Amino acid sequence: MSEASLLSINGLHVDFRQAGAVTHAVKDVSFDIKSGETIALVGESGSGKSVTALSVLQLLPYPSAHHPAGSIRFKGEELMDADEATLRSVRGNAISMIFQEPMTSLNPLHTIERQVGEILKVHRGMSDKAARERVLELLHHVRIREPEKRLKSYPHQLSGGQRQRVMIAMALANEPDLLIADEPTTALDVTVQAQILELLNELKRESGLSMLLITHDLGIVRKMAERVCVMTKGEIVEAGKTEDIFQSPQHAYTKHLLAAEPKGTPPKSDTRAPVVVEADNLKVWFPVRRGLLRKTVDHIKAVDGVSLKVRAGQTLGVVGESGSGKTTLGLALLRLISSDGPIVYLGDRLDGKGFSEMRPLRKDLQIVFQDPYGSLSPRMSVAEIVAEGMKIQGGISAEESDRRVVEALAEVGLDPESRFRYPHEFSGGQRQRIAIARAMVLQPNFVMLDEPTSALDMSVQAQIVDLLRDIQKRHDLAYLFISHDLKVVRALANEVIVMRNGKVVEQGPSEAIFTSPQTGYTKALIAAAFSLETAPEGMVSE
Image (cartoon, rainbow, N blue to C red; front, side, top):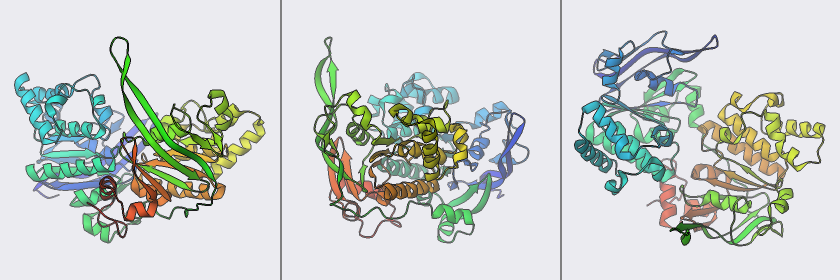
């Protein structure tokens, strides 16, 4: 390793011991980071990226985690066997970390002022007044508007992008030399993601900050990093300059990652195909009540006058940022929340139908949720999860139910013999396949897919997109595909609705939306989602 390196990791091994078994999570990892440089650790879930990063600050759950071998030197000082006093002097001072999900990293019971200020008081011994002034300065620095009004806010009162900016402010509070960013934009909308990445780049230019960026998104790597280390199964299989890795990857796994973006074309638009679900001027308004008598003084217009048609064998993509009304629209179409305006399923009006009237129709109108780990019961086996809908609908024997479970699992690419296992025994991609099987086993006509790929690695995303396309073609299904990932939408949807603040700002054929968007908002979304190198031909950007 170079003597000029700020951080040098040499021959790092990390093992986890549990119930007598040993898992080799990181094997012989070596790389260095120079002052002012950004290094990206790239790989899919389970590759060892985060374990490597947490090892730098000795934040792994010891004693179950241990280091059989290796060296981690920061400014020439060994951290591997450092005492607590030394580590405390490094953590949050010289090295700071931004975690993946700010909502779980920030304390929900403390205000923003208290959380950022606590770092300054603990590490620098600042007074309340001095800490408050520094917190305001930091919030200005990370581009939070009207920071004075945000000091007394709690995390749940901020948007995802604002919470991530607060996390960055906390990480920068003590002016560190090295920032470890662990998937800092995964949970964010494309436009917010672009803002956060630009902010990090600005901060790096202004302060000469070094950065260790952990991600599975190669688009982010290309914009942020000078050098890349590609990890899989705990090992670095390829390392080099970013452009060299992208232009001429040498290892098969690197080539696999670079080829993993969702591909293929959506079904061709067919205006003769029967309309499965349609809505006209659909509204979902939530009342705002105030005062002693809780009078309605205003409404939150979550969905405000949306009209659409979803045809058999076709996919309608609904895109927009968080809070635009996408999911609320889908839930309203399925009559899972109250709404105003006609909703028609195969000629039958659904609006006005009660719970008991809707129940027989539930098998025809299915949903696949964003987070399969949260939507699958941990106490039920896969067989029980997939068969649950058939059990509720009734009229199917146990033998027929098991046969259909086996068929559904095989159709989504899972071994039917695994149906007696539980969700925690599967990977994220496999769990999403289970969720898809649960929906498809009822042989529906319409499926709402609510961000079904956003929590998945790039290669797994591509597999799920291919799977959904194949199932749609096989069964002539109508999809409502909700997402903020425009690359996935472009691969699946033949019609697109762009939503903002509950309203449709643009609507039309997918190719027209992506190649010649008409509104500034759509242009901004597309510009944020596609880098110039990968922009579809004819794409317009602001």
